[in-house]
Image 1 (cartoon, each protein chain N blue to C red):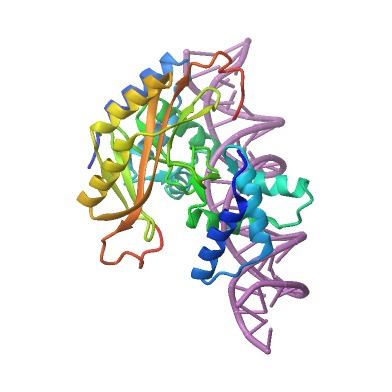
Image 2 (cartoon, each protein chain N blue to C red; image 1 turned 90 degrees about the vertical axis):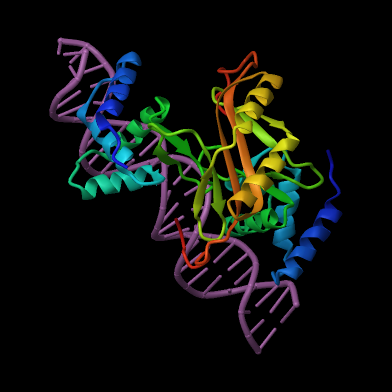
Length: 152
Length: 152
DNA sequence: TTCAGTGCAAAAACTTTGCAGGAGG
DNA sequence: CCTCCTGCAAAGTTTTTGCACTGAA
């Protein structure tokens, strides 16, 4: 599970330089906490976790940096219909989509190669240059203690 | 563009009875405004529009009713990654997905029959009972004045 | 030296909740 | 007549903004 943080730092550094953003220690601190986070997280959750771990990076910086990390694809930006942005590490992972249980909130991942073909085909037909997609399936899972959990 | 409101009222009334919710004039007022709204709208936008049209239905009732209307499928609930819930009329329309321009916010619709097959297939494989999906493609549109618009 | 980035707190945007009164069944 | 629904306002959640200061280039 431990990823190579140095490599990720390098990717981020290159991106920042290229886009003429400054390279600051706070930004790498956010990157580290984000890549260490298991599963999906919201910006505020990450901020609070950092606070609790004696980091004194501000909320504004966390929000700002997560956007940058999504822009350079180290993180993936998600939205599971809860009106909050979720992120997850995209570093060294293959792209995937999600199934969400409407009872207990459980999230499963899946990969379906056809989806990229559909994206390309539809975008072309309607004159779009595709940059990404979001495909969520909502339903009820068969987990034994589904309905007992409240969230997550 | 004018839909048959009476038919929609009947669908809603049946749903309310069946689910043991009360049939109130406020709920039908929300339904009427929702079906008349062109395109996608947020709950608060609908509330404000109703206010401006001399309706005195409260914010709480609007939010509550839109949930009911989505539950009985008179409306479709959407999320285009802006951290707010959007609705659109689903009455007498065939289901569709969306392409969203990341520059100007333009939204185009598309229908792709394969998608339902993928939903069924993936859900089955992972032990889910599917209840719906959300498929958004993000990209840049070829509209002449794209980038000039700020939103919508 | 310069100005983008930072921390902090306040504001904004959207949604939910608490409460007292009113009307649907 | 019993509560569910309503309006209103307050509070909650997540995200954005304004401002003065700091440190990267």
